[in-house]
Length: 68
Image (tube, rainbow, N blue to C red):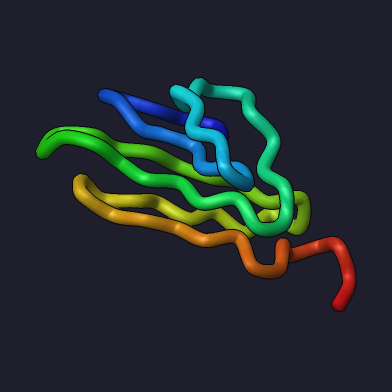
């Protein structure tokens, strides 16, 4: 997680955490943006950047740069 404006949650297994900049994603994590003005950017190890809009969700089923 390289950028976060507003509030978002990290769902990891059965737990929910408040998301913060600098958090490393693990396979199976789900990011949820809360609120109408939340913005978040995720940068993967291979340089891929994903911007999330408000009210969006990202599931990390397979992370770029970690093989298949």
